[in-house]
Amino acid sequence: MGSLYFDHSATTPMRPEVIQAMMPYFAEHAGNPSSIHMFGQRAKRALDEARRTVADLLGAKPAEIYFTSGATESNNIAIQGAAKSYAMFGRHLITSAFEHHAVLHTFQALEKQGFQVTYLPVDEQGLVRPEEVEKALRPDTILVSIMLANNEVGTVQPIREIAGILRRRGILFHTDAVQAVGKIPVNVRELGVDMLSLTAHKFYGPKGVGALYVREGVEIAPLFFGGHQEGALRPGTQNVPGIVGLAAALRLACQEMEEESARLRRLRDLLEQSIIERIPDVHINGHPDKRLAHISNVSFAGLDGEALLLALDMQGIAVSTGSACTAGSTEPSHVLRAMGVDPLLARGSIRFSLGRDNTEEDIRFLIEVLVPAVSRLRQMAPAGA
Ligand SMILES: Cc1ncc(COP(=O)(O)O)c(C=O)c1O
Image (cartoon, rainbow, N blue to C red; front, top):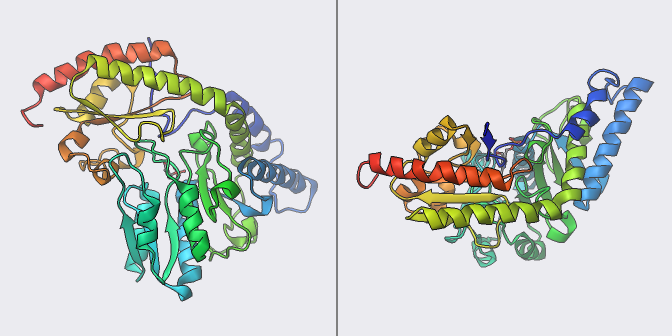
């Protein structure tokens, strides 16, 4: 067996169909979509078509879709832009304690600019309770941002219920939908959100390209200044091949979603069942059913997750201890801490995130490597480690 990749929540390999869709826009049709001549207009048509595709797949209007360089940028534009633009109505913001750092660090930066932020707790399964959102609201609350699905444990949040509460009060609602898009149905109108972020490289599209949905009528201040591109909210020449790739990847992911997520759920259940049967002292993190089908986060008591990751890597198996953005940090995951997982147990946690290329045979091979690796590391670990 060669190398096995179980880190699809960090990023995914590009699909050949997506590469093929992008290819003409690197050289053959390399016009600038803002140019008036035919080269420009061809690129513009590709851009318009991609915007229509993304809008259709999300239940939005094309004018509500802004292309960006990825979800970090989408989250920053949404959160900072809305905070700036609505500051005259109040300076209180709400998010959860277990967001991705692209959201958490944006809120922390806003705190330094005089905004007040409430970081909501999550329960032990990683759910933000809508009642907690309601309790935290103040007359000066202008914006709430809660992720649709968590990147470390996969818990899917009650976004629709939270949106209902906020809509009644006229408070803006943003969701980081990076891990959910292409995995579960995501329709902005059904969810009732005002802003939604996504990034192509999580659903077999290219890296460095994403999108932000902004509901018509919501005015957000730009963070960058320059040309008129993307409604002047994200000025700068668009990444045409990347955007074409994003739209192609999203279309394929949505077409195959039902079948693929059922397949991944079966594989994940096999993985978790086998771990529970063959390895003592393990704990599965996240909600038992309100969870993305492809993510399994497991705490192995009495060992260091990073050591297990390295042991598996030596055998050609790629997993992660949490978010790719926090890799190398010695701190236990802020997500698991927010869920109340004991810090020592959190240190022994591994995220397995499955994808299109994984098969049942891969899972069985992973188990055969994992079982002795865990027992070896537990023997080596000092008591209580
Ligand atoms: C939940 C979540 N939000 C945001 C990001 C950042 O996305 P990007 O790499 O496109 O900036 C990620 C990627 O790891 C993520 O998982």
